[in-house]
Image 1 (cartoon, rainbow, N blue to C red):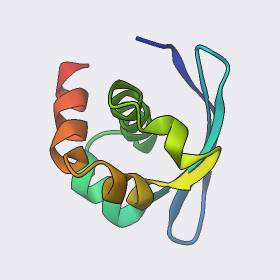
Image 2 (cartoon, rainbow, N blue to C red; image 1 turned 90 degrees about the horizontal axis):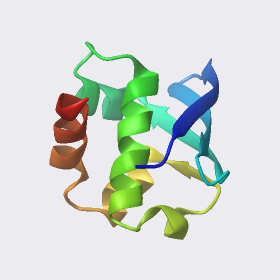
Image 3 (cartoon, rainbow, N blue to C red; image 1 turned 30 degrees about the horizontal axis):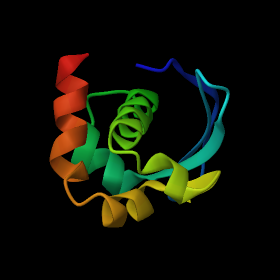
Image 4 (cartoon, rainbow, N blue to C red; image 1 turned 180 degrees about the vertical axis):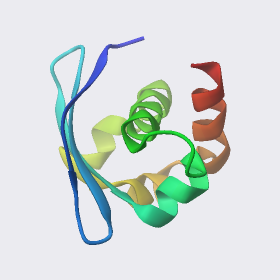
Length: 94
């Protein structure tokens, strides 16, 4: 699995903004809302870990490339319909 590095994390009005780089040096700006974080991380897992799990799942499903270099996690939810179960499973594996 590709190395996923969180280069920066900042809090926004509605959640967080992350700058993420994968092992193949692809860079993404990912927005994670509080509601998506609560759904996937249930408030007990750091938001950065939720974003790492999101990127891992998107890489496995080959959906990451279709999202572009900047996207909101909710957009990924509409693209990959199983994301709401896939991310908690990915978090449990780590």
